[in-house]
Amino acid sequence: MDDSKFFLVFGSIFAGIGSIFAVTGIIFVINTHSFVGTAESIQGTVIDLKLRSSTDSKGRSSSVYYPVVKFTPSSGEPTIFESSTGSKPPAFSKGQQVEVLYNPEKPNSAMINSWLELWFLPAMFTGMGSIFVLIGGVVLVKSFRKPASFK
Image (cartoon, rainbow, N blue to C red):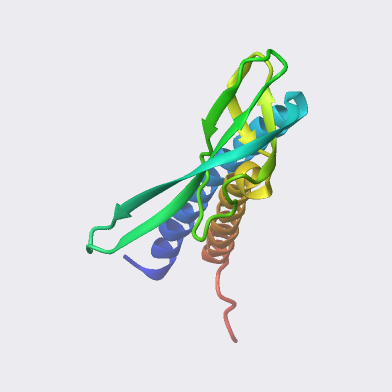
């Protein structure tokens, strides 16, 4: 395979994968923006920190703390949820008051109002996708250019 074909394939793959990531990120942004726009805000309390451990293929283990939050929505029924975002060290402590965003029709679909919880995944997917599209696009443009011949 000559260089121009290699760069054409490489650029196409990079741009294609980047497009998938970027579109996924944009969907996350739209969904998060919609949730934030319709959610009610209320104070909640971190009642526990759930430690989750995992081991990778090389046998290395890692642990992450996920906050468990209790709040009472406008319906009056106390609700407990575990955050979908964990960290090490823990981002919150037991007994800490946090702002909770929740859908009044589905109080179990609640989230802590923090950048990490709401916007990290949309930012990561959109950012990584954009970088891949940019790299793939530059490689594709360069693969279509013919080198200038010298006389």
